[in-house]
Length: 197
Image (cartoon, rainbow, N blue to C red; front, side, top):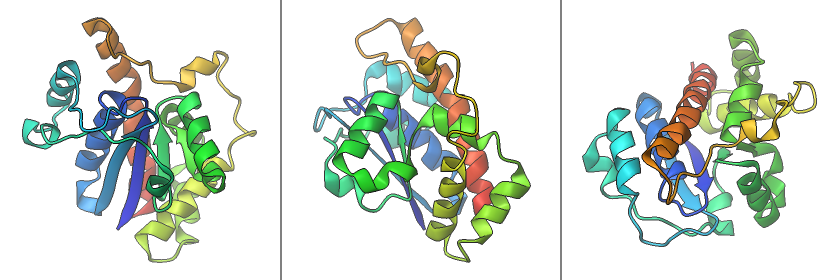
């Protein structure tokens, strides 16, 4: 088993949607995926708009209906093999809480961008350095992706590494947020599947 944590602000829109997408798409690989918010609205459900988007993306309502937001704390950061924040600011807040997690914490679109710079072969070779343990293999791939920082040109607009916050905004903004998030999830799933091949 391996573990992923997704992080946003309130833990009612972006990070739970990312977590459910990852959990669904990584289901055969025994992934434990959870989420939390840097200012989590403890106990709150996902917003109605996010629930609708989740359903449209193939996540059963029976799963998303049970979501309860959590306020991120240091305990949540000790065990994940990979921490995926929704923005660069969330990434910074995670690292401030747990400085030792800097190399395993990414904005999700940053992770996708850096992972795309590595070939399938490179990702698989990196994973092999972790041996047979799924957690160690994921950590090895995460380290390989982190090593691309400084080698891969950053986006011209730094906000291209962020997933926009739709909370309290229009349906169109929710759709934009999901359109930024979903390809990043797909790229992340590619890297993790290769890690566990």
